[in-house]
Image (tube, rainbow, N blue to C red; front, top):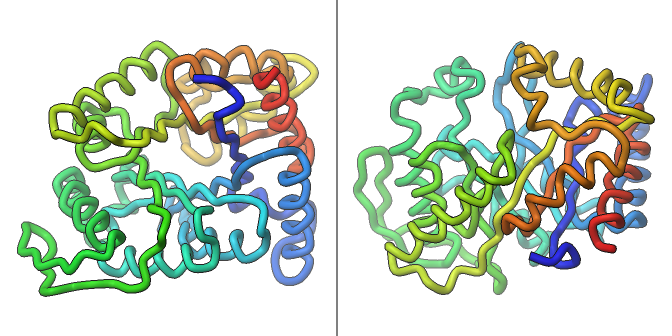
Length: 316
């Protein structure tokens, strides 16, 4: 894979949209507009937004609402929603939301879909048995693909029932549905039902193996003509050296995931721009066409600029 074909995205995380005392209202919108402008000027391809209903301590944001707010605020940047917790919702309602967002921004929306589980309470509170997430995801994703394609769907399954359901209008350009997850079941799902695989917290070698497995699964399912959109998401720290960069990214991750940074450290690039670019380059060789960054660099603007520099280095 050539780096000039790779799309780069930045996720500032919901709690990082605000700077200083800017928390909500017009001041927040002004601040966000400046950040979006900075991304576009720096050559960033898309804004990555997340999705959580009730993460550790109640943190959350609705991913599709976030996506709609971004695509209507800029005509230049795409939006990559990942990972969207499809298993917590009904696929018909999700399909309608996706189609509505796509009307605002034809060709600028992509979705990474996952089953969640980093906080089990979030799944339970949404009325879903955690043990059923995989089966629900398979059934839901299959229905979602058909509904987004404009099919008339009649279905009687384990979790969902539809009778001649059909949604209009559908976009001329298909919306990429990329499957996240590290399990064998997730890789099988990506190959049989997805347009690619989205990884996180893994080595480049394992990334290449996962991509190969996904494409083998697709071939076994008779899907030989997929325009693959494999990707990786990286939390990353930027600084004048590795110690400063680690001091920025480690507290943020520990605060969100309630887990010691040592568990993630080998998978989280941190250091100078050159250090991060060197870490990420093998993932492009492994076949990734999308790279998403959650940068910690002192402030939002510095994080955007650092990712733009990584992009420039990798494209040389």
